[in-house]
Length: 394
Image (cartoon, rainbow, N blue to C red; front, side, top):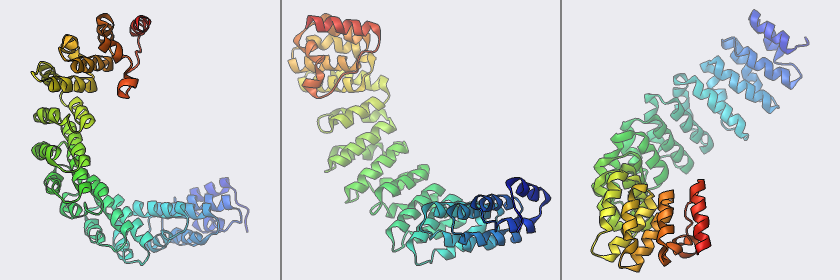
């Protein structure tokens, strides 16, 4: 047998000497066999493919990986069954290499992959579903939709994710049916379908399973589905599960419709943090303006909630309105106002707290003890100086 080097193999490729390259595939050295395998992939044709296929039985993992990669580049349909068989390897790296090559073959591999979905091994069926999703051609949709009824859970999950990757709206109805078993995966895939999925997601907001309701609400939020605002508000106000109410509030914040401001303000009494964070994601100008007006509410309870929410939002536009309420008649309102200013944490907010010097403003600098939260640390020199003076006075 000839002694092969990488340089000699490169020369054989330039000369398109397939016969001698095939001999190089039998070299006793693993590195040379792997190099020759990758090199012969530059010469397309059945002869090259058949020679490389034989290396799929090589005992060395590196050689098998090179063979899988080379077959994908050569692209001969006759090699597809051999690559499908390698999906059943007990080595993850070889499974992935075979899957990548089958994906690379694209439409040419679809018909044989469809037949392989009848394989008795769930591992292979799940990998094929993933491959079909990566190929992404319209003619794989029917195969994947049928796979949603596979008797193996991993295969069903892989089919759901694959349909999401393809993103064809014709799969919306079938994906909606899968929300019960796989709420997270199915809602993600429905999101990938875009606005066409919104009617299907809306239909599940009253599903008896709270995981389905919560996942659908979040998906509607990520889709910025303004048509869902009314139903999400109802869900946030009336659902029996706090998990679902929080998910609905989060979704309303993502959608950003000003119609949600009043319901979110009311929800502060129930899902405090979720409602406040959602308010912060809304159009700040309108949300802050609305909350600042409620600082003048006749009821102490609403003034206190408004101050707390403004602190969560952290918008400096609220500072003047908050500063006025440091003299509120109710001590709880004064305390929430001081905490809100501390959370906003700008030099102007900190200066107001320092100058006012009341029990509430002093307490605001000890928020970790009082409320279990820590105000943002002052980062600029001026704020640090004010804080040092404040601590000296306290």
